[in-house]
Structures are given as structure tokens and as C-alpha cells.
Length: 186
Image 1 (cartoon, rainbow, N blue to C red):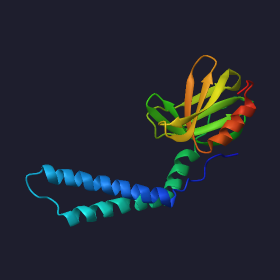
Image 2 (image 1 turned 90 degrees about the vertical axis):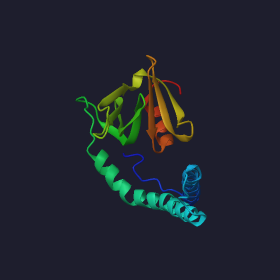
Image 3 (image 1 turned 180 degrees about the vertical axis):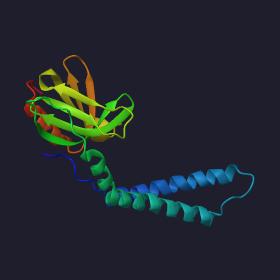
Image 4 (image 1 turned 135 degrees about the vertical axis):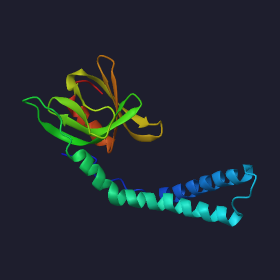
């Protein structure tokens, strides 16, 4: 079973807000250049036009391009990620994920097998490799926010005190599936 492989659609409300904020910030930066320059660089109409154009390009253009082509790129990138398994181990659930290794959010795939939680990175990372966490070594699983803002994180704490911070899509499904497999009261 694959979890979280459908691309997330950006709502029009978010696109519109992004369009306004980026357009205003871009215009403010151009205005600051103009203000502190000895020469007049931009007219007021030019600042407004450039801000609106930049806002539309970033608020509408980038999300549309990402929705159209991003899925093809990420599916090719993570499509050939397969973990090294023991002889009696079988993959039961998988899906795209990031694992924080220091300051790097290493991209790859998260797997739930009949024995372990496995994270395997894809090739487009600085830190590559596979991380195995045995179910009987898991002390607790917590929901967390990425950057203290976005509800898409899970923290697995092991009995030896190590924390593994993951970013996943559909984290409630991951939590349910993890909770079924570990032998502690969460």
C-alpha cells in the first residue's frame, strides 16, 4: 500500500494570498533600490506593473507548473528507491517522506515492513543511506509541526533516546499504521 503519493493541490485562496504578498514584497524591494539610488530608476507605474506581474508569475505560474510537472519529476526520483530487507522482511506500506539528518531534510521513501520502520534516501541528497528502526525499540510517536507551522511531521523516539523527525503526507494514516505495529501504549 502506498500512502501520500497524490500531489497536494494548492487552493486558490493560498495562490491569491501568495500573489499579493510576493508582488508587494517585490515592489517594496524595487522601491528601496529606487529610494536609495542617486538616480530615479523606476516610475510609480513601473513599480506597480512589475509588482503585479511578479505576483501573478509567482502566485499562479509557479504553482501551476509545479502541479503539472512536479509529480512526474518526484515520481521518477523516488520510483526506484528500494530498501535493503532481511530474508523474512516484507514491505507492507510505503510513501514519500523526508528525514531530518541535522539541518538537511533528506528526501526519500518511508517503509513500514513486518519488522521495521525503514527510511531510504533517494540519490539527490547530500546524506544518503538507509535508516532502520525496529518496532520493539520505539518508545513513542509524536505529531510535530515542521518549522513550527505545518502539521506534517512525525517524531519517532527510540528507547535509547534518539529522535527521528519525519515529514510525510497524510500523517494521520502514518500514525495509525505505526501505532498498530508497536508494542507500547501511545
